[in-house]
Length: 99
Length: 452
Figure 1: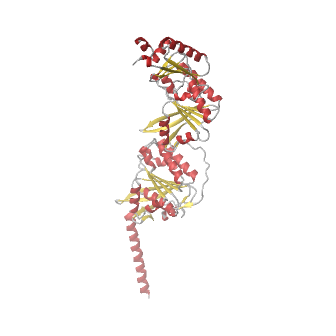
Figure 2 (figure 1 turned 135 degrees about the vertical axis):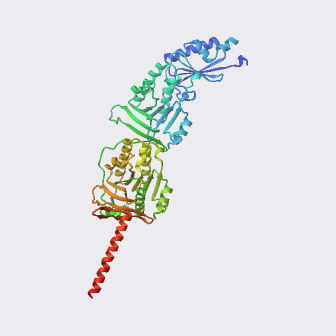
């Protein structure tokens, strides 16, 4: 598998601009820029605006980061303050080591 | 869910599973969903696919719930089972505060919420939170007494209302959930002065020629083989002949057995069954707990709406429960029968081993008939007498009770200075008397001729 073909589709669910949500988004962008430059796409969904989307991805906690691609779907909840955990959760570090 | 739309948020079963499972209770969730009366939401928390990092809250859940509530204007919410949140997430403190917030929020929205939780050891809920936050706590449990389990329900708290603190048995069956109050306190039933025949003309005579009061309860007790079922069947038959409906609960014999056995005394119950006037319900008492029995009987009675009910025999119920429980059950049943104006006949076996259940019940019933064995001169004969019959004249005499192939007859016993004579002794005595009378007659005739 060639890593160039990998596209990371991440979806971050938030509910309004709460400090936690903002922190999560900043953290996420920071990690992605460092480790997945150019290969990722972040979609932010504000459940206050689109509440019907919560059911589809089985969202119950806020903020939740969902890795849609690559499969399988992984979820990370919390403000993503722990970089290591996020990377392990998203399975990013191994790829980094390979490259 | 009946008039107020509701949201059912499940953490355990998938929506489809839930729908399938509750069909057996008679709920059609699909239809409710279609009519926008209900919304099912399955919250799946997969521990393995979730990583926690840093601060978070359960706003997502709230928003989902809110969205579901708003979409159908729900007034009721069910969360089942909240324990799974704790299982799926590690940060218990967050869940606790969030749940408290959730309850607050639901209250502000004016929504009735039912939250289910597993019972923890020593505490009402495993995580010891929900019972403080909620306004009403109901505990359900399962208790096994004598190998038979009964589901019980207890209201532990209900803020701002008077509630029964007792444990109430309840039942889950194809019609949903039924709860039974353990006792009915009031004694304010309408009573009837109409009389119904016992089915045995000579027994009617013992009750002033008219029989029992309609809507009264009759206890028929006797030792084994004294013809209790026979009398009960005759009574049932009589009710059917009056074109009234009769229910026969048999705890010993199957309907086929009873009809066959009754044919031997020239009583055919089959036509009544075919006409739908008579309905048999046979089940072994051990099949369910007492409450279940009671519930089933209530239900059958409500459906069938009989004027007469026969329980044969109540003593078999004692094998299922403790004596006190059987009494309480019978009390409720007698009560129920009286409130419905149904004439109830119960038979009871008294052999001394069953701790005299009949004596305990006898205070509840209006009429108590005793069938007894009389053993004398190498014969066993049946004797019947009335122990009590409230509010009517009744005979105080002991009658001999004879079962023949043509039915049942009560024969006046032969009384003389030495006591009563029954069976062949009575017959012998009768013959003697007849012979004596004939002799007298003959002598009179001879004397008459001589006189001529």
